[in-house]
Image (cartoon, rainbow over all chains, first blue to last red; front, top):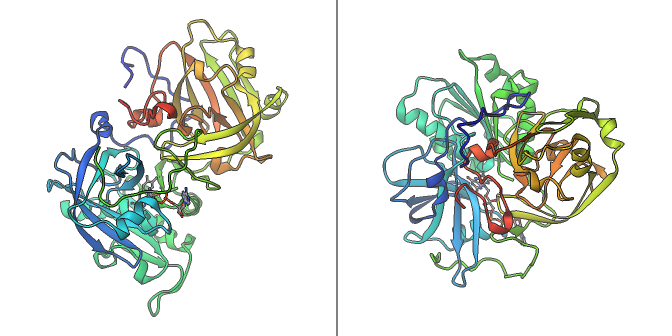
Length: 256
Length: 201
Ligand SMILES: Cc1cc2nc3c(=O)[nH]c(=O)nc-3n(C[C@H](O)[C@H](O)[C@H](O)COP(=O)(O)OP(=O)(O)OC[C@H]3O[C@@H](n4cnc5c(N)ncnc54)[C@H](O)[C@@H]3O)c2cc1C
C-alpha cells in the first residue's frame, strides 16, 4: 500500500460512519492458497456447511469473508465471496455455509459435485469493517445465509466465554430453513416469515422485534452488524435507525 | 493451475467488453456499501472541490445543474466480480467542475468523499479527460438512494468502489492517500482490465 506516513492524512468533514475495525494484512489477502474439502454437513434443505483444511490459513476475526475460486480444465475460473462461518481457532480448518442458488455457477458445484478430498482456492481473510474482535456489545441481525458471518461471532463469543453482551435476531422463511437451528441458544430470537412453529407468529422483521433489544442498551451501547440480501439490509438498517441506533454504530454486509 | 474436480462453469461466451474474472450480471444491479443508506434530499446535497486548486468551490444542486449536461452509456465493473452492460447515467462531466477550480500543476491525486464520510482515492488523471462524471440520473430517472442518489461520482473505467456514492467532494493532493476500501486491503487504483482487486495484484 502507498506510503503515507510523511503526510497528514486527509479527513473528510463527515467522519466515516463505519471505520475498519481491524487492519487487513495485505500479504495474506493477496495470496491464493489451496483449501481441501474435508466434510460436508447439511444445515437446511437449501444450505450446507463445507469444512476445509487450509494449512496456511493466517487466521481471521468473526465477520470477515474470503474470495473463493473454482478453476475448470480449460483454465476458465469463477470467483465469489463467502463469509467465514467458523470461529477463529487453531485447527487449520475453516468452514463456509453456502445457500444453493438456482442456476448458481459456484454454489451449484458445491451442492451437486463437491465431495471431501476436492480442492478449491481461497484468498483472505478480507475486509476489516465487518469484523468483530469480541470487544464491544454486539447486536446481530441477519436473514437467510446472512446469518453466516454472525454465527462466527456467536461461536467466538461462546468459545471464549466473552463477557460482553451479544444478541442475535435472525429471519428465516420457516424453522426448516433456519440455518444452524440446533446451535442457536438464548442469545437468538428467530423471526419466521412464511411458516412458524405452534404459538409463534408468522411475521416480517419489524420495529417490534428490534425495540426490546434497543431498549436493553448495554454500557457503551450496541455495535450493530446487519447481514443479508441488499433488500433485507436496507430494511433492517432502517428499523435500527428508526429505533434510535446511531448510524455510525451500524455495519452492513450485503450479499448482493 | 489448480483445477477443481468436475467444475465446468458456465458456457464460455466471448465477450470483449468483459474484464478478466468478471461475469455479466444481466439486469441485476447488486449493491455494495458498508453503511446505512443516507436520506439526503437534493436541496441538502452539495459538491465541493478544494485542496491543490486555484479556486476552491462548493456547488449546490441547482448550481451544479447549470453546468453542461453529459451522459455515460456503457459498462460498469464491480470488484465482487459482476459487470453490468448498457447502463445509462446522466449528469455533468467532472471536467466541467475541474475547469472552474483549475487544479495546480502539483496536483496528482484526489480523495473523493461522501456525505456519509466514505472515502476513496484516485489518480487525478482518472478523473479528467472525459472519463469521470457527477451523475444524478440512471436510465432517465433520478438516481435511487441505494445506488448513491441524489448524486454519485462515476468513474466507469475503474472498479465501481471508486465511484463514491452520495458524493460530497474531492480534495486534490500531491500524493496518493488510501481511502476506506483501500485501507481495508483493496487496490490503490482498481483497473479492472489489469484485475487490480486487492493491494499487491
Ligand atoms: C461479502 C459477501 C459474502 C457472502 N457470503 C455468503 C455466504 O456466506 N453464503 C452464501 O451462500 N452466499 C454468500 N455470498 C453470496 C455469494 O458470493 C454468491 O453470490 C452466491 O453463492 C451465488 O453465486 P453462484 O456462483 O452460485 O451464482 P451465480 O452464478 O453468480 O448466479 C446468481 C444468480 O444469477 C443468475 N445468473 C448470473 N449470471 C448468469 C449468467 N451468465 N447466465 C444465467 N444466469 C446467471 C443465476 O441463475 C442465479 O440466479 C456472499 C456475498 C458477498 C458479497
